[in-house]
Length: 343
Image (cartoon, rainbow, N blue to C red):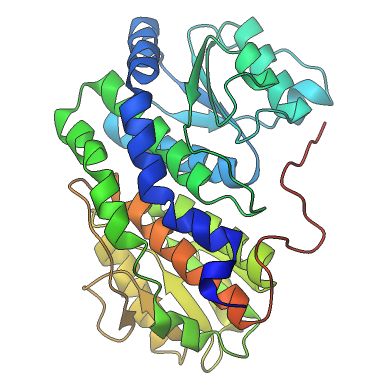
């Protein structure tokens, strides 16, 4: 199996084009939604999502809290779909994220949030989906068809749509400018597939992924992708947590990937990466601040809040190659299907 033969590989290479399409065709929807959020002036937001989409929501949680000082709380969809409870959400904003927009529990939770007084904003690649029907505003991801089971370009476009919404709400011109510049940065990022880190995974079936702040969300997504496309047991930790117990399983050559954005958390994450490397682990970090760990080349953006988007793009380019090197078809992971509908 060559690298250009997988659908996942083709879709990773489409990420810059998909991002450009979102930025050119999604502007009006994003600005209308941002105006509505600004008018709502929420003291807090809530998110509704599962899987990769929930990792987008975690990323947006950090963006909102760092940019607007507004917390985002993740709500378990079962509160509405299984337990049939109505939450009091007057004056809040509900961000629901779903590539397909079809999962009944996500749809029901978004409907309940709106009924409870929240302004409902849905981010989906299918603007005619059931999720869009229960939202006040829908942000079409414009990612184009995604056929591989592993979400890649829809994850990236969900993250872009969400951070763009928050940037427009904040009227932060620096961040808006960085978002506009993302397609060119993503074009560089898809060409970095980290062969150094790939070689460390040879013969290994367990790995740690580390992050801090917004890059924690990217670490979560990386760990999921290792599991679903490579059948590698991967654990995601904040660098603030990994030394509190999990590090005990590290042995010689144990692979670790530390995903650092260029922000205030980078020195702390780099320091932890070096500590783990000193214990014999094979540690790779997207930071020039590490000394013992191996440095991975990365594409920085014009704003620290958009750095995680180029990081995950390079990771996707890498993980597809890891899967194919292990003889696994990442387009059709065992036991999985493209759309998982839970209640």
